[in-house]
Image (tube, rainbow, N blue to C red; front, side, top):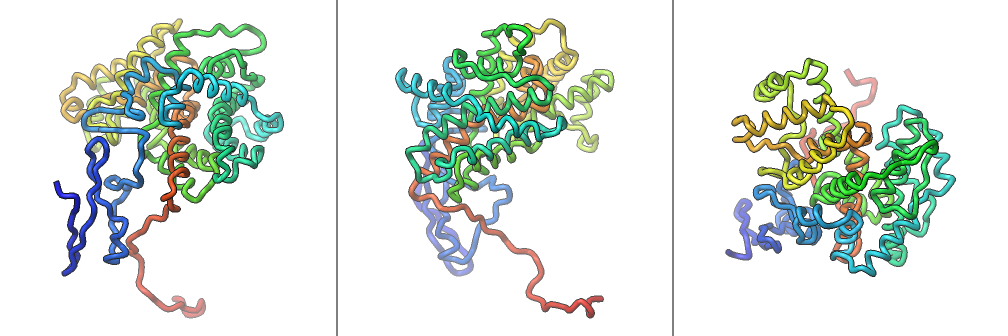
Length: 429
């Protein structure tokens, strides 16, 4: 294959370098296109545009492959902890025991929030969405750690990374406790990352919280499966904001807001809302399967299919097993979960969905698990954010460490009016 591509515009032909990724992906370098021709490319939603070179995550939607730093997601979900995967994504390799111990210690020592930050929660009304609180509180962290404001302060980056990973779960739990009218629960240094989260979420001063190690493992898996997914909307937002040399707290706060959108991180919340709607209408799953096949019905099956994966989402296979394990622990059957499993069975056996490869995706199962664990629906996207944080940090760090990074500034094709004169107010008819 030639290492050059040619583009002809009018009577001018230019050569464009062809780039090949480590997994054989092809890309055409158009970085000098405008300088040489005056033309730009138009690619709405950037679906055919690579915005960067990255060594973090490989994704093949056609084959259903997802790897972090070359390691298959299946192996990581089964054998690693979320903290190990966070280190892998951010620093490029699985940690040795000494590295893991030091990183874990960093997270442990920075899990508490400054006491002044607790007062911020008092200012939010009880109706506040946890994602609004999460993004605002992450942005406010920069006020408490001014040394992190300069991305050129390399000595501060590692501790800033540890602070953010550790404190994000504390902020999330505090926002939940605020919504419940319960007292805040401080983190415990004796607990692991995920166990600490569950304790801060569900323990109360009046009684001892019994830790379920199966739930700890499932939560580890859920966070690992969400930890990175290449150049998605929120990750691209973190990179976009970070390209201005905005600090890590500001960049991640922007990523949280991008994740909040229902087309991105809000998908698992929409799954439960769909299930509730089916339940309220009598629970007739077949009726809604048929409605999903009709384009003019206005009904869409949430949690099926994926923008990138044209095969079974590899994360969904793993998370389905976790969902089965968690739902079996429930004391009473949940009617919404029963509907979810009937819907899954119908979609996997119906030729309409099979032929179109509309398989249940990670959002379908994650909502089921979170509900079974007792996490309220409006916290689902927050859980997504906690899991995705290491990926955001890894991409931010990769970008700021790259000496070729420039501030991002996409172009456009202008379609407005051509030059016209200003008309005085008195003459405007």
